[in-house]
Length: 337
Ligand code: PEP
Ligand code: MN
Image (cartoon, rainbow, N blue to C red; front, side, top):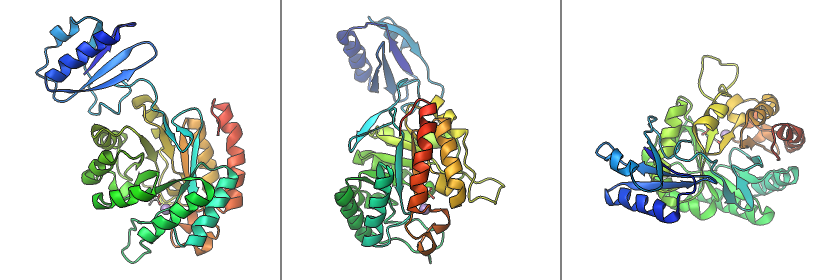
């Protein structure tokens, strides 16, 4: 449940309520809005005496939260989560674009791509060093060597780096090189991994499981939040449907639905959602128009030679063209790019 404080409640009154709740063995989550403060109560709250809390000074009302996710919900925190990353506000007015190859293939490939996507206006560099491939015979990524090349590309361009982490025991290694930890669709419900990235305190991009509901995505975010890590972006990357023409089906509904349900920033991945480079531009535009806070797009200098996901990768000039086309769409929905 949440305790909504009166407009103008004093810091002293807020602190007294927090102390009372914590003395009863609960944790609290404070959301200080411009007008009011909301105190979220974390834990099994059934034994709490709501009437006596409701009589404390400064308390306006006590509201039960019926949804299974709490910290992720807008009831707990009405204002959007905005956090800083390498000079960019994530979740703010600006739409953040992360671009780069599916996988880091060589030092030259990632550094060349980094320069090209930066030139086109990307804000972060993506690239997988540990690749979760459906087949064990496919390219599995360069591992730590790939992480070193990503760090070199950051050094060369100033772009922050996002890369995937697949296992809890990899988190500390990946965190040494990356600015954002990506959790892939196949690991959305890997609870040991969610725990580990929660503890790491690093910014996280949590991708929706390809067969998971919006509510399950939010419950996974709740795991990370409940370990004290609030810097999370959620990513819609397409889900499995009966349609086979595209690799997945972008659930565009997820964007405004998530905006209603949660304060966390929402990113769309048009590359994995479509699996086809020629559909990526249209779907990116739809995502921005629908209210996405960011995009993550695969870009490769030679898609025909790519070791993974070449069919859905944009060539750098196409990506630059897309960035230019996105600007007026962002502006039409009150955003910048
Ligand atoms: C990726 O971003 O390259 C990737 C593997 O994505 P997903 O987990 O969405 O399939
Ligand atoms: Mn990929």
